[in-house]
Image (cartoon, rainbow, N blue to C red; front, side, top):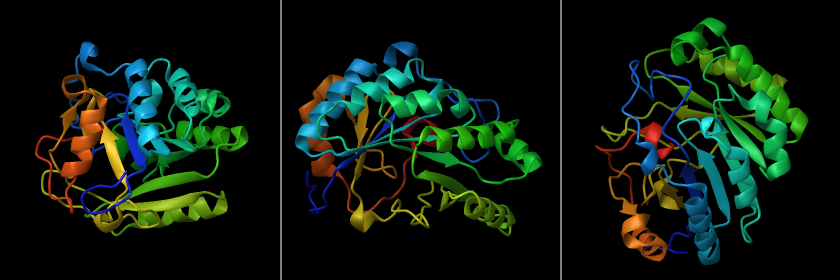
Length: 266
């Protein structure tokens, strides 16, 4: 699939839920969020149909995100469904890894290739502060389980905050080097202010070479994270939603007033 600027779009990021078991300070307000009603959350069958149609059009790469995807009931079944779609050769997940110890082997067996794990510090105290109560030992256990299961590569997503000297990031980088993990530094972003940059060690944030579109937890295809354009699959149909997303995908990101990382998947 090509968009209007001749960029090859082959990557679909799917937010399977807006719910999360952490309250990271840069993602969710401390009091939580107004959750999508259950009857608005897209079903696995609908996700399957959208991915299958996307694969027929040229989607080869799928990433499952959230919220936290591992709290979506039956997530292993969804992984198996997508892994069996002809043309999908790269199936991954972004997770906070709090529950990964219990799911890593099942996810791998179902067809998941690899994981990106959010980890902004290796200090238990700072982790509790950043996540508002999270236990970093569960993350370490999740990483260990992912390696044992064969999920590879394991990439660590580390947010670099604007208001510190990045000592946390340096410690995370050291941890990754010691444990044969790949590191990606993500500068703290602001959807509403349009503040974003290229991911260090990754491809995100580079509008010139953007190859992705997004499916939200309530069934909207969004052509750009930093834009409010969205097309509801249930209203337009799958083919039309894809067509409009490609036709109207902007050349550069700007800002998203109505978007949120927990609802779109980052």
